[in-house]
Length: 322
Ligand SMILES: Cc1cc2nc3c(=O)[nH]c(=O)nc-3n(C[C@H](O)[C@H](O)[C@H](O)COP(=O)(O)OP(=O)(O)OC[C@H]3O[C@@H](n4cnc5c(N)ncnc54)[C@H](O)[C@@H]3O)c2cc1C
Image (cartoon, rainbow, N blue to C red):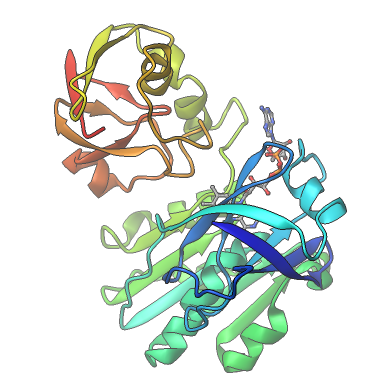
């Protein structure tokens, strides 16, 4: 879609929201809480942004972008160069973080991780669910959409600005596993890790989360999984693209996506880090060796789909829907 930036709004320190509309006034495709779009910036960079407006308003999309001080260009461009009236090429919406209502919901958001959570909270209000939001940020002034959230139900929103020595009280939020409770979390890696640890004793499938960036520290097991994805696999295997019948050898040190590109077989991709879900394909035959950070444990076990930008195969042959 070629959309126009209708409004840029300062939401909090370091966060601007963009309102995007179709220049002809047409309605935009419907979406559900947790969905994100892929923005193709004029600089050539592709970045993903969660939709944080209203699912009931088909006339526009709202996204919010945090200025990353170490940005290689995406958020810097949005904050410094993007202007009202500019055209933005958008793909999607796509949803790898869907909200499935439960009787009780604990939402945990850190910083810009509030963006996918906000429409979920609205949905929880609409469905009259028993929900609580645990929202932390660097400072109160850096936390976007606080007024909007509090207007939904101030009694259910707990704010934790770190500059006031307030850190999200995960003991209170997740201290006791509960059968009828779902946990939805988005935020920095440290928060995701803590929430994962707390939810270790919770019923399987209770925790749902989304990462915005791939972890990068060498000590981080998740980072090791992603960064060594292509280099790790020593075994050569063959990947078969089902529709074209193309058979491509994937050597050690190459990802499936790279091997397909080498063989001129077109495949969808975006982040190349196993984090955005764009390259997800169905697995028709063979055993995937998952290296992404998107699929849940359950999805990995069933092996029905995989992210070809980082994952490899445990079987000598893999047939994928492509
Ligand atoms: C599903 C999804 C939804 C998202 N939703 C949002 C949203 O709603 N709002 C939002 O602001 N962002 C969102 N993001 C993140 C967004 O797409 C960008 O990744 C983010 O804005 C940073 O982009 P950038 O170009 O400014 O920074 P980048 O240049 O991509 O850098 C990001 C960080 O990673 C580090 N880094 C990057 N590459 C390397 C490297 N090769 N080696 C070492 N360090 C590196 C940088 O130091 C920096 O801290 C989402 C991402 C995903 C996958």
